[in-house]
Length: 167
Picture (cartoon, one colour):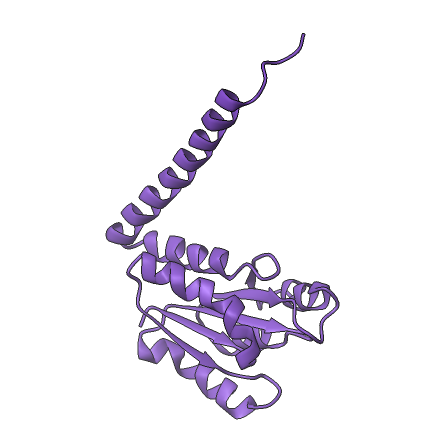
């Protein structure tokens, strides 16, 4: 397992699935689980303190509302943690989650992506792994080139179907 994907509750899975999907696309192994900072603190402690002994290299942690999971995991693990703020039913448009995750004290960093952007968390995890794994790095390069090509094609399509510029 290279990446651990965890979330505070089952309701977070539809958002966190995008991280799993992108890791699959890059052929990066991962595990996925529900680990609540508030409802299962012992499980959270165990997960954070032992993840590195199980071959996990990066943890992606998604949480809504008070969003303590990413920060608490980061406080307990030597691994890099990527936080995904989730706009949940009890959040303030995701702002409370975003601020809870991004505003960590010095010494306990959590890389934070945009609200509900677990795909970006998966891409960031792949890029971190790719810095020391040539196979993953090559897949990232292909992915980035595909993004570029998609935009260039969309631009070309737009220009060919839009009226000419007015002078």
